[in-house]
Amino acid sequence: MKTHIHKPGKPLSLKEVPTKYQGEVLDEEAAKKLLKEDRKALRKLQEKLYAHKRYSYLLIFQAMDAAGKDSTIKHVMRGVNPQGCMVHSFKAPSTEEKAHDFLWRCQVRLPRKGMIGIFNRSYYEEVLVTRVHPEFILGQSIPGIKSVDDIKPEFWENRFHAINAFEKKLVNSGTIILKFFLHVSKDEQAKRFLDRINRPEKNWKFSSRDLVERGHWEDYQYSYQEAIQKTSTDWAPWHIIPADEKWYMQHAVADIFSDSLKALPIDFPKLSPEEIDRLTAAKIQLMKELNN
Image 1 (cartoon, rainbow, N blue to C red):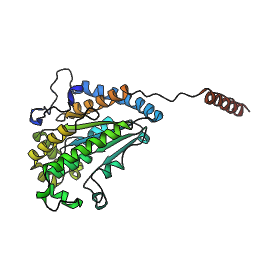
Image 2 (cartoon, rainbow, N blue to C red; image 1 turned 180 degrees about the horizontal axis):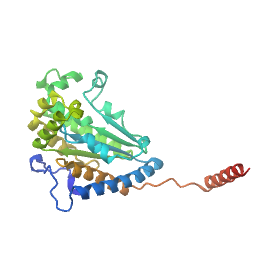
Image 3 (cartoon, one colour; image 1 turned 120 degrees about the vertical axis):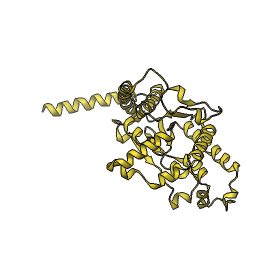
Image 4 (tube, rainbow, N blue to C red; image 1 turned 90 degrees about the vertical axis):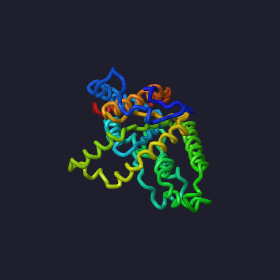
């Protein structure tokens, strides 16, 4: 799955990146079988991560509406112990969140050692949605910005630098960051919107606002393209995942995550001789109690 990594510093044109699986090795049945195997591996590896308590994981999912963020999180993380996993979905920032810097609301949701943190959207919204709708910046009380005209190109460059520095700090502290852009086509998005409209049990997932945002498709594609180019780093690269076929998207994400965990130097803690002696004494005592 290394083919999905956007190499740091490399130019990017999302129009040239496929939204469908281009290989010939996999079909839907084979991908689902591999997904099942990866989930089994993830369950075992998560136990080691949780017990080891030296590393944490932050999985970031960004995408256009209906690309499959929710379903990918659900299918990939199925079976993982919920005690070791936290999922946070970030909507429009609250009044309190806007009173802090743009990283704050995500920073307070970061996973602690041994945990897997999943961000369904993230601080990247602040260089995506706000890039398409710069008027949102005006509500953040930023010094020197009184109108949209005050938001210069260097404003976005500063945010990209802040994100890279923030992620570097996290990685240096033991957090492994996996960033996924689920790359869906405009036609596939339309089909999924129609599916939500046609199925009563999915009506709640559709909003008229979705069509408004769809009207900004090209602006969003540019914003994603720029953000990925500027923030795909050696320590936290972006994975651009073809998202038109959910079966492939889910397999790809699970495979990347399980491969990363397998490469991590984690294991169950090894007990000292003194601790082993205490375990032995406890075992003897408990066996005596059961035999009495």
